[in-house]
Length: 180
Image 1 (cartoon, rainbow, N blue to C red):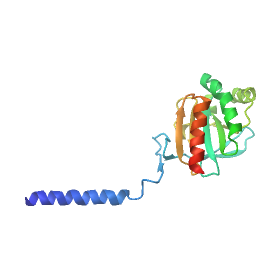
Image 2 (cartoon, rainbow, N blue to C red):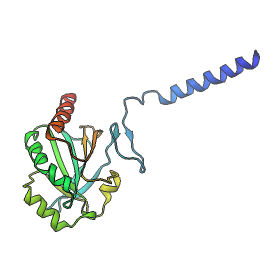
Image 3 (cartoon, one colour):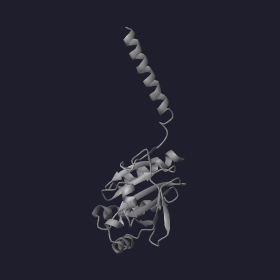
Image 4 (cartoon, rainbow, N blue to C red):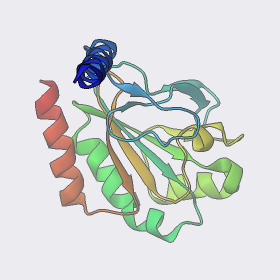
């Protein structure tokens, strides 16, 4: 009987310690470790990448608008399929969302990436991941991969592959409403 009470006491102390240790963490974003993919609920890694004019542009972090980050390559067939939709989405939601296209230049040829941008008449910022740092940080293994990041820099959606424009509109509108 005495041993049972001691065991219950130890269990109670451990349970209280666990509750105390995790108190207040439910609303905080989790920072992804270097082995983990940034996924919904995780802080999007921040870095600066050069645009087509070699001007540094911040990726992720806190900002005034929703952020759609799209990783692509010029040789990627699915990237070609989604290109017109991305351009339309960037125009349609320009008041509430910023779209950044990140070319996986370390897996691509920069000349071909620039031709791709011209062919699809992209007007949103295109960033060049020449050293593969962004691709590594975001754990991109498939193209296209896109992340929807809220104003606080928290990943809200991670989409691997192509989805329809209508599905993108639904996701974007959902997070615009949440942030208003």
